[in-house]
Image (cartoon, rainbow, N blue to C red; front, side, top):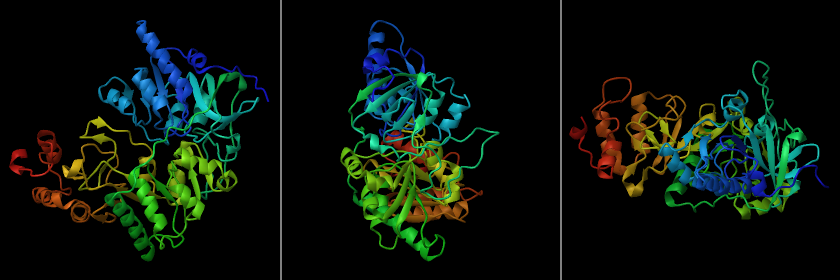
Length: 499
């Protein structure tokens, strides 16, 4: 069927976008991210710069994207503003040098912030789809993210129809956008598999300025195989959940899981799937990685609600080759729904996220290295952590070959406070912080989670901070970080040096 929309080359589509405009791109991780148009836009920006003309755009997405979007535009120095999350090394460098304005934001809040007008006008929505109808129906590809909101708010729309993803993905999306206050009502999700919206986005066809046809794989990278530390972290989490079930603090039928992104998250999910005492479970999360596909195939995971299929090409082929099976077991939702605090609390999510560092009070830094260098962003971890039935943060106890302790006296940047973090897990063990006062938490974290090379130093810090409700010293709290910046190692601190 022919469509009533202009068919454009990527270059022709990019030529429609003007300097200083704001673009809402599809993509939640590299899954479903626009690829051809942003690459062409980067080439255009380089040409404009070569002629001495300014050309930068504001970039809104769902979360991080791939090399063809964040990477290409950053390398072309074509990004003026970026939100809500990124993971590209070039873009990260530009953010930390102050060359790109970056606003770190809870992912569940982004769509409503855009609707409220807090980010200004959205001139273009550039989204990847697997099918489009003449009436303006758009079947998204491997993620939803904030695409549905961008499509509704944008002045004009450009669509990449990616033939790599079959139109038969129709039925795997659940597109729902809540009303804004004062007309907002509850989100009617009472079980992980509840469908509450439409199978596609529908827009005014007059807004569609053109279609670009592509045939491009998602640029999702693979993950490293588990190492002894990540395997042990996974086993510690699984064993802890089993003990909580035996104690009656987790229902015997278990509860839905949320898992962050990365090697540690993959190892935790694998350990949960391998533990025979963990019942078959559901997932209500923001990202599905490769490790979830065999869990779905085996029945260990009975249903997965997500925002994106962040899969390697091989894993994605397993899904598209057996769509009748997976369509009944996977649902992709907008990030406003997959991460919504109301739904997270109602369903009783067991939340699993990773940290850069954790302090003796149980505060977590998940975004900044040494307090000031942005890594990626807070992502969806805060959406889940504060509202979870049980919030778990995990990380290896050391980094940089043992020179850095992930357990520190005071985190150099705080994303999740002691009021939200309940369980801390490293390869060393588990610290259950529930119902513990600050000094009890500190002792648990040192004894159970800190690496042996750093336990004595941490105990020395505690011995110097006996007074007060919190084990806190304004002069010594950042001694680990200051010692590392001076000596390249957090070990062998001379406490008198930092008094």
